[in-house]
Length: 476
Ligand SMILES: Nc1ncnc2c1ncn2[C@@H]1O[C@H](COP(=O)(O)OP(=O)(O)OP(=O)(O)O)[C@@H](O)[C@H]1O
Ligand SMILES: [Mg+2]
View 1 (tube, rainbow, N blue to C red):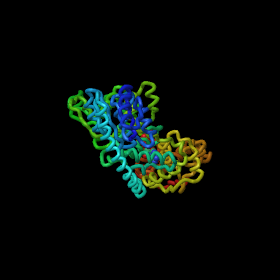
View 2: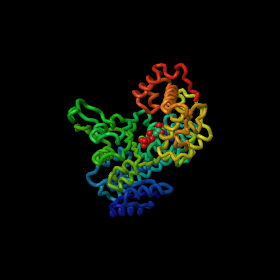
View 3: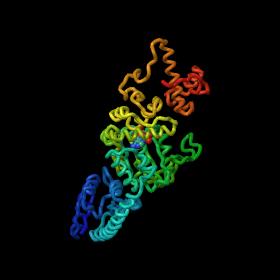
View 4: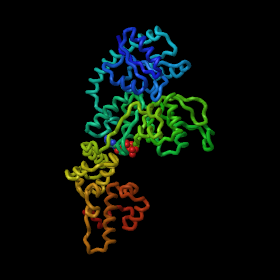
């Protein structure tokens, strides 16, 4: 006796298959669509031995269900039921890892024969998987996290540990992953970790920001074009899908893609092939797709701005990157990490944070998340005088002071303009020092254009000598 799940939106097919298998002594569960089938599969304990699913269903078709199941258990045995004339689709499904397919109409005997064959394989796989799991358990204990993979994701909080575990697990599969999270939480870093932890690590990791490009440009970026496809197409150009062959393609800001392009993306994901603009030949590539967005994509679907079928295709495995304010225990680790990294780059002498400064950092709500914290640490390095970053070196709003208070105030017996110039000169020299004398970097640290910096260097007679000129007292 085996446990079998039957998923079909056609009631008579569903019931017919279930009855036939029940009569051969199997324990059969049924579901009327993809999402409830997936839910039943995930809830089952012990797991189902075999899944039989219709290929054509909405909103989640059999392929999406297969992907979702394989994301959690690549060894799961899935059989497709296909309508008459959809054999090509079934063949491509087999290429994607389906075990077998049954073309309608089929007899009860044929069904039982195919299921028995599937069960044999399923039992064999279950045994191998158990052995592999035991081995892996031992290996995982010995192997340190990889350097460009999840090891780059700093944070010891429970949500971060969970995220790293999920990344490692999902990296082993080829399923589409949707990375969700507020701006600056580390979505791109997560996507690159998925790639680096995957068997595709040696292949390319290609990123495209879908929100930054106009529709027509994005289309030719993604799919490439043949010579003469449009006025400016002087030569053939490979698209990003082709460049990512053997690797991973990150579709960043997927929530910003237009309805027209959503249709094209869906087709590529369903069929695994596409054509260059102006081209006729279908091109097949082997690409793992990761999408990311700061939008609430389910809400966008509800509002009719994002296609539901594309959403299910991309959302096979959702990964949520938690905002920094929900894991304040990570702030200290991240701040130290950024300080170390920046110190090496700017040759700064600052070694850490005072307790008071660190307390403020932990208490701050971090609306801009990890990126905001990174910028904040950079600010601190520009302003810190001593060995440790102190309250006064934090950006004014975080330090909880008026901007005037966070800097030493010159005495009142010099005119205001002179006092401002003194301060400006000192800040320029300090930034210059942190930037190791690189002018563009100095300008960046000060948040001004290089041309403005040249003007000021001239004005203060610093010229090419930088801050080392006579009489430069930067002791504060
Ligand atoms: N857990 C982390 N450990 C170390 N660095 C991190 C972590 N999370 C984010 N960062 C760093 O923070 C910055 C922002 O991360 P990233 O660009 O991945 O965020 P994002 O969510 O894609 O942002 P956006 O929504 O603005 O595109 C990067 O410099 C990244 O290296
Ligand atoms: Mg990003």
